Image (cartoon, rainbow, N blue to C red; front, top):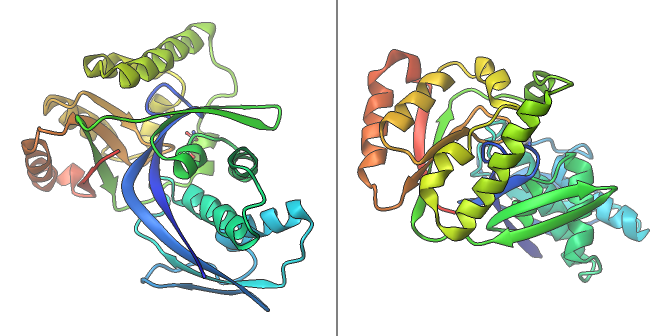
Length: 288
Ligand code: HSE
């Protein structure tokens, strides 16, 4: 039996739309065995599709298809700690798990780059699947069917405060809210910040993250889909967060804080509980 553990991920990191992403200390665990038909079960209370349309199975099958190997079935178990449809990479975790699991069952025939390319083709963009597969803070580009990545380590000075609401938001809906065209000015706004954010994370220049994670390409279009989202931004910034951004397509709002700022989480929890508009959110302390 093969066991695969995949981390939650936080994509975009503000200005790096479809490019930047980081892995977090929250994981789903999957097991894989070859079988004569499809058996899929969850070992917690999460409801998961049990047939051929299960995303883990579909991703595993993509590996068999790529290698031209017939796949009668698989026995898959899932333990889901990553909340679904919250902008924390739960779909990417399923895709990456399916690919890693199938590749391990088949004797590691695909390279990391091939697996990442397959995962990106299934997901449509690389910014969750790349850190889910590689760990760390990953810059990725998807160009003509190939994925190019650089992985860096985020040092131990930072913690991530995930403000997770009790409602989901489908990525397809959050992507449909975006404009088809953007201005040259907005493109420059983002590319300069995505470059600055990457350099700031690499150099440990965390005071730059506030300006570097601002964005003109997606957040203002998505915030109306996240009731209370504006207020969470304000609250986290007022409490001294270094940076605040929508995690992936939302609805989770991510704040970057110094790891030694232990009080941030207590104060944020108390503030959420005290405000009627923010009761849907809970704050979780995660590490990179
Ligand atoms: N970059 C993606 C988006 C991440 O913002 O739509 C969500 O899957």
